[in-house]
Image (tube, rainbow, N blue to C red; front, side, top):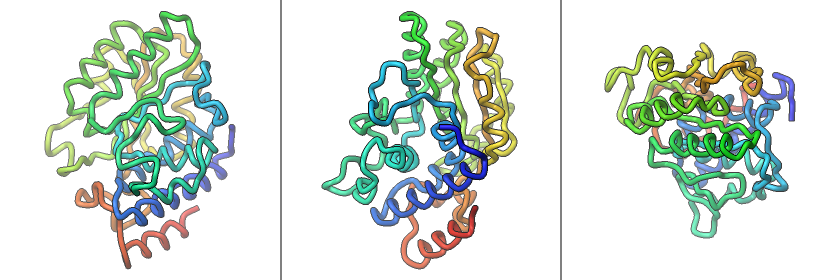
Length: 276
């Protein structure tokens, strides 16, 4: 489903509104973690990159997408509902007793490959899927979205070493580089920079997107990801803003895992209406 950049920007704003509405209604949810990754996932699902069939979630030739930062489940749920994997009305039951999903990502939801939320595991799962595709001579790609705080986990680097060693060039990792985690600013807790060189040292090709909210830059990074003439896996490091779109939530650690309520919710909604 290839869309113009203007349509992708409009879609991104719509998805942010869906995320905000479902989390405000539930009184919980990781709004800021979801907002930083909106453009990346909208580009994947609406920009002609990811292969999927909403009417047949288990389609054998689908690309596999792993949301390793499973706390951003509202983002993926909103996109899957919008694409018709399940009724949009289900979003109103987010974290409700009669709903089909809770705070962290669940694999019993149509379109979701694996349950995640215990950080660090998504890249290893993606490695297994990519290796299986090689062994079975399947053409599907595996994409995995990581948080940069998640890159503090040792399992990430064990998986990165494994993927580089086995030359899994059918795997693309995206790092949501919003520079925040639940307890504060990442570079002050344990420095990750220079992140691109770290991945390269494990045998990966690395691309850094200066503005992870620019569809032009995102689509350019994904361009020809299926046709790369290399045996190296690819990591795309997208510099983003946690809470992007709502000024009082942007780059504020204390909004991690919190949904605005009352007056703040109304302000957030008004600011999103002002976006493209």
